[in-house]
Image (cartoon, rainbow, N blue to C red; front, side, top):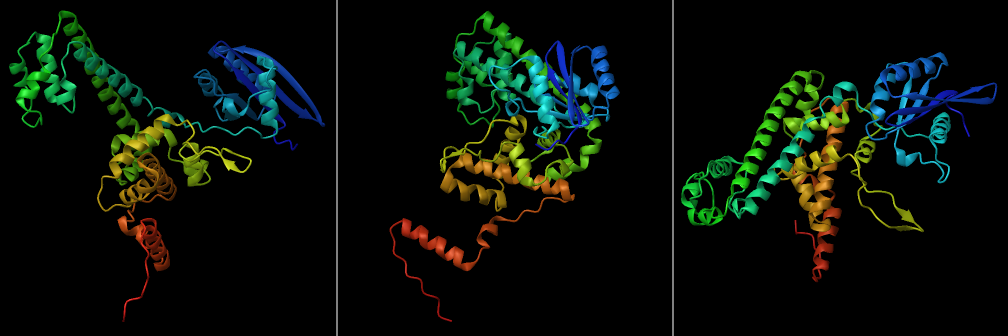
Length: 406
């Protein structure tokens, strides 16, 4: 097997320790040295000095939870080429797993170039990745508000489209203040609420106890605190957005993508597309392409692989907004695939098309150009003719085609 790296190291990273196996090749002979370091900053610096003293060029480690990140930050000073391995891709032989063996196995795979490096964004890009957790935490508190109201038999979620909107918030605040009259509570609804006053009164007729009011106030305070935290975070992101502002403006030109969605996408893929050989590689990395699962000539599954949770969910949300734009390419693509494969596969195809466009826009420095809904009709006449004849035949009609008289 071809030897690619003569001086490399494999790291088996844990919470408290790092087992390092240094693999050196000289005069055709392989020498290995194994050492164990603590994960404190001082010990990790000693690890870096030890690798530098032995002229190590490449270092590989598994992506184990968040424990690899401090090790990566210490070693990521330009002196070593770091490789982050997916643990599922570098599994050792069952029954031979120890910390030392894992480190030696990583070093062996790295020396022969058998580890596919995972994409690790630069520090500036990683700093944009904190808002999503706050949004999910806030959503969980909103669900707890709904659960508390349900326990009190208050059915606001049946008559209001947005429980935490202006009308819903006003009614919940009144409930906390002790108001129990359904008519007075219904009077707080905005005039644009579709539910009738009678429906609102029935939904607001319940049994609210002191404990319910306590829980509602507790969750509303948490929601308000998270709102303030997100506002502070958005201001900080805006300050740090300098190197990415052009990329964000490019993405906003795509239907369905607004400022927040563009920031999330940039924080996941960065702005340097040279790390992906093609748009297909980027889509595969984002786990938005069908998996390869074939045996004995039979394709067993084409489900999407799990992964890229933040990027995939954001693109799908943007895709649902994009397909609402009339006479657009993305809307035409959605309805075209939906008729044959269903809405779920169609929306994933639209999301993949948006990511493809983003790849070329960032690579070429261009803005989005919508091809329009008639793009799929601009095929050859024969293709359109055969397609329409087949559709009519599927419906049970026999069609005879005659050209129009000149």
